[in-house]
Amino acid sequence: MSVKTLKDLPGLKDENIPELESIGIKNVSELKEAIFDSVKVKEVIKNLSGVGPKTVENWKKVLQEAAPAEKPADKPADKPTGKPAEKPSKKPETVVVEEPEETEIVESGEYVAKAKPELSDETADALAVRAIISGRRPAFKRQEWHRYSKLGEKWRKPKGIHSKMKRRLKRRSPMVDIGFRGPVSVRGLHPSGFQEVLIYNVDGLEGIDPKVQAVRIGATVGTKKRIAIEDRAAELGIRVLNRMV
Image (cartoon, rainbow, N blue to C red; front, side):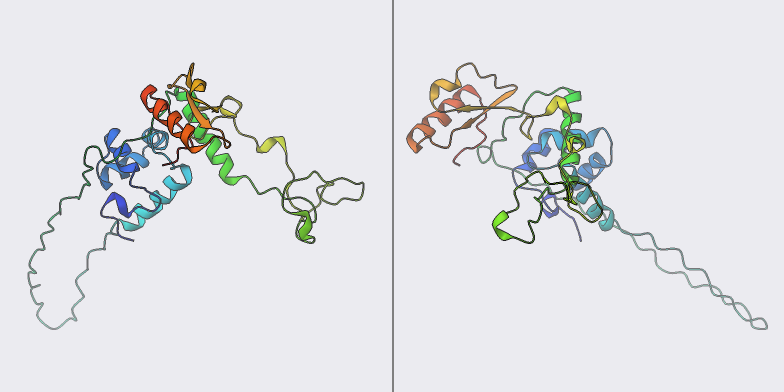
């Protein structure tokens, strides 16, 4: 897979390009250097919305495959004895001209990056660790979910003294265990790092700290009141997690 521009990377959205430019990454080569740097890759995950460690690992594989492999130099063939050795003919040297990398220019007023929380280095690292743990966490399904469709897949703790799943025998579905939880310091935070606050009217925006808190509008709020809340939140610089547009 050839990667010439940032848009060619799988999982990269248009809204991520201005976010990359805000941290000084404008082309594919600069992004490649950043994701292979153990320090800069954390900054990339922290600033890009909707991009986690899995997406970054996929980018590493794509960029490694896209790099051209060096071909070994051809060795001259041995000539049979008894004949005069022929002089090797000089081949014309090939000059490789590097093409300028394409950069996408985003017009002003076309897109505004979403607000980001002010996180400490410890919190950002804990969020990255939580994303990795969430990616490898199995799907917990209730006992006999595959046999009776009326049970559904929602988790229920197995009961009964004869339950093989409860006794944790082999080839049984995994059970919920405390070891599957993420770091305590970021437990309950939004994936972006914000603390969620549920509101139902414009007055609920009072007292919100836009640096560490974001609001989520209740499901029962009507369209008229929702528009008023979003307009007021934009004036205060507060991020709304479930905007209509």
